[in-house]
Amino acid sequence: MSNPDPARRLFFQSEIFATTRGPRRTPTGKVVREAARDIPVHAECDVLVCGGGPAGTAAAIAAARLGARTLLLERHNHLGGLSTGGLVLWIDRMTDWSGQLVIRGFAEEFLARLPPGAMAGPPREIWGSRDAATAAWWALRFSAFHGIVTHAPTCDPEWMKATALDMLLEAKAEPLFHAWGAEPIVEDNTVRGAIFESKQGRRAILAKVTVDATGDGDLFARAGAPYAADTHENDIHHCINTSWMFAGIDMPRFLTWRAEKPDEFSAFMQRGKAEIGLFEKPFVSWRDDVALFMGPRLSGYSATEVDDLTEIEIRSHKLMLEHLRIFRRDAPGFDGAYLMLSAPQIGVRHGRRLEGVAAVTRETWDGRIHADEIGVSPSLSPKFLNVSIPYGALVPRSLDGLLAPGRHLSCDATSHSFLREIPQCWLTGQAAGVAAALASNAGHQPRAVDPTAIRAALRAQGAYLSDPLAQRAIA
Image (tube, rainbow, N blue to C red; front, side):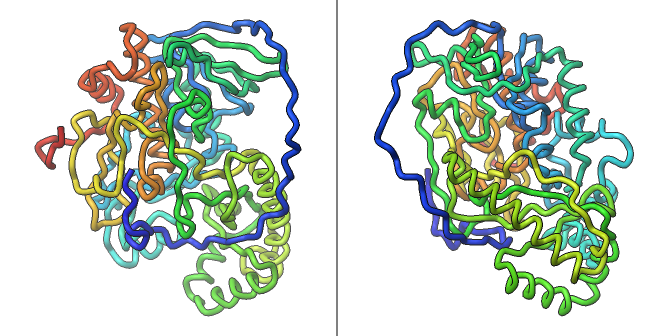
């Protein structure tokens, strides 16, 4: 995959906190031998989805709606992954810079099914507005960027969990909670399902097609598929932290103070940094009395090393208490703040990225439309056109029986910075579910499914695809 000059790769300006990792555990050099054993087959299905985050939930629902018997493995007790359990309840841009809604299908239906009061964001009629005052107001609420209002709402995580489960059960997909997809079942370079760990011990599920929606490519990596893990140290997409929420606050009062007295706000932030080093500003939520903290974003840790993940949890929870103390003492609107919730899921942005049949790279942000396009993402900046996502970015180069949507799809590190976001995971997850169902229904490998059929099924499920007459099509 291409690696452009780093100066051209960096678009996000959010602060990154470089930290010194604690001492690493010294390898013992010892091993234990696990005896060979027979593993009970818990179930057989057409499509197995491992991971119930945004990509996995969308994949399971899309596959089941096409008649495939679909099982969804999820290690937690809820669906939604980082959008719910990770408290990433700020849903990044789903509109392009003209205000056109381009991430649709599952994503649009899902948000439309949230009840009144469970979502906050700009009304549809001002998406794409460049009015300076309007954009400035919504910029403080993380829904306007580069002076343009976007569809980037914040949502109640509990209603997102409930809505996702309702949609899954309505589609007749079968969830299996408290089950960690641990190991792929591979025969003749083809994934035939997965082994999961549970309170019942190790059990297996056999499947015609497996969707790796683990977020970090746990299954495809263990199956031997090649992957990339390069990041740029100054780009936030590799940072890790555990989010939290404070309640009992007056967010309109805080935002008014921040807007009207920027020097005071800047001095407050500097005092916080001087006092505890790692200090972060709050995000809005779906309620005026709840504040969301999706940082401090900690750099220099691995999302695939358990000691690093443990240290992140310890640091994040200590930082939560320090933030509460300082915000209650010094920040207008936070004098009555109290702890509401620390995220039950750690906020990982990057672990592994598949090396697929195709890839989204910085060079493909030129308005081209891939012949096997399965979705369209808004670009990072108004100076770029919408980004076409090819089906090949979900398909391993040589490994069969598996698709890999979500934040570990095939792309370069720059493109990953936006393809990892919740709406893009919904988009690629829905496409993977459609393709998996078509493959299992026809008895084909996923790489053999006709992209025209995938695109037709996606359109039938409400997805947005490019008009090939509007931009230059690339075969």
